[in-house]
Length: 95
Image (cartoon, rainbow, N blue to C red):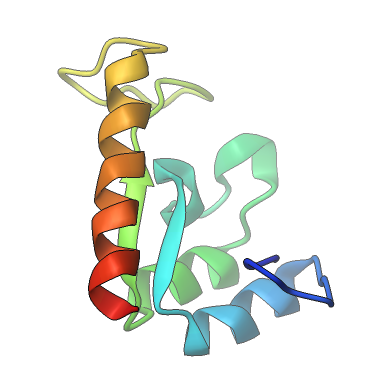
């Protein structure tokens, strides 16, 4: 987990769970909210922490790892551009 201007970095299941408690915005692929997604890297506890967090979530659709999101073209640059614009709006609103 890392944030803008952070001077510390933590990784692993517990770090994700703890960070989700105080996060304002969570950004990542849909898989971060699905237990056992991303080739098993997302534990049920991590997925639950993301899904139940009070943070605003920007989930980026990806058709990977036996998950198909209908209506999404794999690798569309427009998806990333839309996500980045939305994140920019959120951060400017909270600044």
